[in-house]
Each structure stands twice: as C-alpha cells, then as structure tokens.
Length: 404
Ligand SMILES: *Cc1c(COP(=O)(O)O)cnc(C)c1O
Image (cartoon, rainbow, N blue to C red; front, side, top):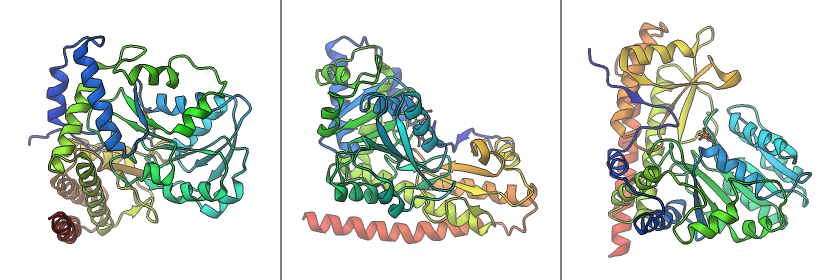
C-alpha cells in the first residue's frame, strides 16, 4: 500500500505549504529595500505572535544559538545563575552556562515531572543574574509553570532576569510575556511556526537590554545589541536566511488567517489546536494501555508515552515508519528505547491525530501483542475532540457576542 511520509516529530515539524511557496519565491538579496520591508513586516508580526511589546530579533541559527546568546549577552564569567532542569533541554542550559563560566545553581525534577515552586523559591538568591528554564521540555514532554516562576521572581523583588526557552512553548502555551515579566522568550523556526530549521527568534525586555550593558562574556556572532541596532532598520549584521524569513512571513499570515485576519486570535487558535490534539492523543494512547511519561503536567507541544516493560520504543518507531510512513521520535539520552514521542505543534490537524491513533492500534496489537479492540484509541480521541470542539465553538460565539 502507499505510505505517505508524515512527520510527527517535535521539530522539524511538517511544513506549511503556504510557507513553502513563500520560500520558493524568495529570490532576493538581503541588502535591498524589498528584503528590509519583508524583515520589518515579519518582526512586527513576530511581536504579536510572541505577544509582547518588547523588541523581537531573529537569528540565523537553530534554537540553541538563541539559548547561547541569552547566556553570553546577559552574564559575565563567574556570575551566579539559577537553572531549572528536568530534561535534556534543561541540561542544555546547564551546559551552556558552564561553558561560559557561570556558576549554575540547579533545581531539578525527575524526567517527566515539573518543578516544586517552593524549592525554586528557596533556592533563588538575589545574586542570581538570570533564571533559565523551559516552557516545555520537549525531551520529556512536561510543561513547566512559567507564570508561577515569573510570579515568584516578582515577589522576590530582585533583579534576576527570567529567560524562557519557549522553543516548543510558543504556539502551544498561553504566555502573558509583558504582564508576567518574561525578560527573554526564545522560539525556533522548525517548531510551531511550520517552516524548516535554521532560524531562531527571541523577545528581549528593557531590563534585559540594560543588563547587557554590564555583561562581559565573550560573544561575536550572537551579539544581540548589534543585531538590535540593525534589525530595527530591517537590516542584519550578517546574512540572514532570506528564504526562512519569507517563509515565516507566509506562516504568520496563515496563522493570522486562522483568526479571521487577527494574528493574536490566530495564535490562540493555534494553541487551542495543539491542546485539543494533545488531549486526544493522550486519551487514545492511554486507552491502548500506554503510560503517559509526563502525566501530571503534560505539554500540548508533544506527547511522550512509555512502552510496556520489556519492550523497546525503537521497535514502535520502526513499525510506524515501515507500515505507515509515520516518523515519530524516540526518547533522548537515558529515555531512548523507553518512550516514544509524537508532536502536535504547528501544522497538525485533528485528522492527523485520528490517523496516528488508528496506526497505533495496529502497532499495539501486532507488534506489542496488546489486547486491542479496533477503534478504541480512535474513539477515545474522538470523544475528546467532540467535547473540546463544542467548548471551543461556545467560546467563539461568546467572543463574537462580546464584540457586537
Ligand atoms: C528543539 C528545541 C530546542 C532547540 O534545538 P535546536 O536543535 O538547537 O533547534 C531547544 N529547546 C527545546 C525545548 C526544543 O524543543
């Protein structure tokens, strides 16, 4: 039978056709009025997508480049920082901080879990220059409480900057960036914005810009103050990935169209879409007998489930690819072989979720020998969808009524 290749990986995610067309048409030099106009338009859209009045910059790098810039531009060697670490991406903050000579105090949670805010409060010291965390750690698919951490920092009243890796949080989680006081929020091109890898973006608060004046860690390529000077004029210090900028513009136009031309509403619709697909996936996979890896605080970006003891998640992944063309993600590091992960962020619709659950019924029955009744995972997902879509349509008629 025909197998369409379908990416269910939490980055790169499936490409949006409208963005692909925009990229194909981006035969443009980056030091021209055309490109300047495009970049300024995309940066203005990104502010709305991120949901902030703060400056937003793009960087020619994968997400980790922007993470590194948030350490090198905000700290000096020897500075104390606080890191919340509960997965491979939390460990990435630890690695970057260590590389640049920061003294990192670390609050940990086991893989699959989230942090105890009391422990964060107890560990926070006024001398911490910044607190680094993930909105969702994609390696475990746990969601972390950015709002709770932001509140706690405000209550402490110090100068610790809040830096959030929102690379899979943006487009899957509601953030009040300016209300909560998120100083740096980082996103990546290959995640919810539905374009290929190669570009990162980040919002930077006035407090963070001020901190940069005193930060002494060495940096060259990722010098955010230099980028800011250029990007406010639609320029960049170095060559930007022109096609990705064009693709991002196409994707943000598409997201705005989902909100009837209002990008803020479109962003909320994209988040709701991920939430519903994630909830349906969780219900379907649990109905088949899998265990959620991040049951207490699941992300909408992706879902990780453990395979039954004695089984290898790599076999599930191989089976999905061989039989259905589905590309799912294995666990990273110590989680490899124990879990598999499927994504909901960006260009996934409800029927993608139904397809995945249908495929998983075959895999669970034929490869794992689980007692599957065909339709049970799909039905559990459909139930979630039916309830959510009636809630969502009630919500949007309330919004319409409030407007008129
Ligand atoms: C994808 C991802 C990153 C960035 O990884 P890159 O490979 O550098 O793009 C960082 N944090 C999280 C939570 C991610 O999901």
